[in-house]
Each structure stands twice: as C-alpha cells, then as structure tokens.
Amino acid sequence: MTSKIKVCHVITRLIIGGAQENTLFTVEGLSQKNDFDVTLVYGPEKGPEGDLSLKMKSPARFRTRVEPFLRRNIHPLYDAMAFLRLLIFFRKEHFQIVHTHSSKAGILARLAAFCAGVPVIVHTIHGLPFHAFQNIWVNRLYRWLERVSALWTQRIIAVADAMTRQAVQARVAPQEKFMTIHSGMDLDVFIHPPRDVQMIREKWGLSPTDWVVGKIARLFYLKGHEYLIQAASKVVNEFPKVKFLLVGDGILKDDLKKKIAESGLEKNFIFAGLVSPEQIPSMIAIMDVVVHVSLREGLAKVLPQSLASGKPVIAFDLDGANEVVRDGVNGFLIRPFDISSLSEAILKLKRDPGLSRRLGQRGLETVDPYFRKEYMVGRIEEVYRGLIGIDDRI
Image (tube, rainbow, N blue to C red; front, side, top):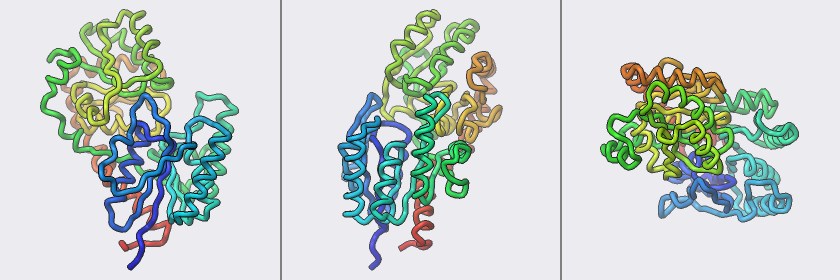
C-alpha cells in the first residue's frame, strides 16, 4: 500500500484574516482527501482581529503544532529559535512538501525546509511584504529576503495576477516559477443571503429606507477609511440620510471618529466593530454598495464576497482589484486617491437604482467557481502532484 503524501503548512499567526482563512480552508480541504497527511504549524500570537484557531473543525483531520518562537515582528533570538525548531521538526517528520504562507513564516520555514532536505517547497503570496509606502531600506531588505527564499522554492502561488507581476518586476523569481490561484471561500453563504435582513438592519439602527454604503476592513493604516470619509461629505450633501457602515476594528478607530466628527458626519457613520467570519454574509446583505479603497492588498476577499452577494463594488484600481471588478459591468474602478471620482461613483449608484441592481446581478458570474474553496484546493492538489511527479490519485 502506497503511503500518504505528507504535507506541512506553516503560517506566522492564525488571526482572523484573508491569508489565514485561505490556509485553513486549504488544510481542511486536503485533510479530507484520503491520500494526504496534513500538518499545520503556526505561531502563538493573537490580535484584535480574532483567533482563527477557534474556528477549526472538531475533531480536526489534520495535526496542528504551535511554534512558540514564530512571531510576526523581527526578533533575532526568537527568529533563530523558530528556524532551529522548524529544522528539527521537518527532519523528524520527513515531509514531502512544505507549503508556507506570510512573509516571516515564508522566510524562516522555507530556509528550514531547504536545510532539512524537504523535496518540494511551495510558498503562497497573499500580499507582498515590500510596498511603496514603507522605508526604502526595509523595502530593499524584504526584496532581498524574498529573492533568496525563492531560490529554494519550486513553486510560488499568488492569490492575484497582480502579485505575480509585482514580484517579477522586483526580480523575486522568474515568471515561470509563479502561478495564480485565487483565495477560496464558502461562496454559497454569500450567494444565498440570510432571510432576516430587516432584523439585522434594525440591530444597527438602520431603517428599511436607509441606503447603506459598506466597507469591511481593519481600522488600520493603508486601509483607506480616510478617503471614504472625505468622499462621504459630497454624498451626504446631496443625500443627507445615506449611511456608511464600517465593519472591523483596529488602532485607528479614535482617529477616524475624530475625522468624522470634524466633518459633521457623526449621524451618517456606524462602527460595527469586529464581527466573526460567519457574520460577514449578513453584514454584506444589509449593504447597498460595498466600497474597498485600500492602498495595499493582494486581492481583498471582500471583493468576490460582495460580488457573490449581488452587490455592486467600488474599488481603487490597485493590485488584484481589476481581476474581479469590471468597471461599468459589476462595479466601478477608481484611480487611487481620486476622492471626487469616488464620491461620483457612489452618487451614480444612489441616483440610479436600476444601474445598481444591474451591476449587482453581474457579480456572481465573475467569481463562481473560481473563488470556491473546493476549486482552490483542487488547483493546489494539482500543483503538489505535478511537483512530486504523481499525476494520478494514489
């Protein structure tokens, strides 16, 4: 009898976030296949976003291991200890494949896997660690680390074509080492919205006639909340009762509330705070349009989620947004920092309910089946089998 394919996934931390949910869906999906033996390694750090480890199915069909020294921030001693412990673990377990996620785990675990003689090393780019808004020396360091780590990586999976283009332009690795596999999710919970929409609206103080502009993102730097606040002034000037629903929490909450107060928009903004992933379909269901104006994303999961929910989307034309948002077809793409165009796009949908409805109806065809978690797991399985030279099922 042929033994199972031993795979180990490694991620820096298991907070509630897009990269983490992608990883957990992959691990759970692979573990349901009889020919895979799957292990998930992650660091102990938590955050205000929530703890995704609590969402693991019980009993899990895969092994888990918390690596105590695997931390998000640079710490020479902890990083060295994490590398050594991963090296010993990989040598002991004899994994055929090590698949890493996030920048810190991607650097340390890929090096450890290489030194341990793991035959196949795969890395997923959920968002590049270097970007235009960071210190130039930090940027150069991350570029160098990614180039070195790519030398011993057989395949680099990007969640968006844009990530591949940016990585190739930064000379991380040649084009042929990359491939795109979009982050998978449970699309059905978005396609079939909850029936108690009005009850949910009432919970947040929304009347049946309120028109809601929604944004789902951490209240954090580069997420673009300040641009939505600036655009809101013009929208509210024409339609005073429009509501802006912000879903998420973070360190900028007080600063954003101050900006809203200074603009006289307190009655128009609602802070929903942190909600669980299970609540996201309900939150999108009570929105009339979803706005995503982050300055740095791979391909934000809220875009396919909103389109699957039948909601038109307005997004900055950055990174992977244009891979799902079709300007004038299922939403609008706006030049980054263009507040005037952002206001006009929102107003256009508010003024023309028929247009809003038509754009929303075109969303599902863009994302189904390409963003289903089963589709993602199937693509990743194909990658694994190709790299280890197994084309047929064991």
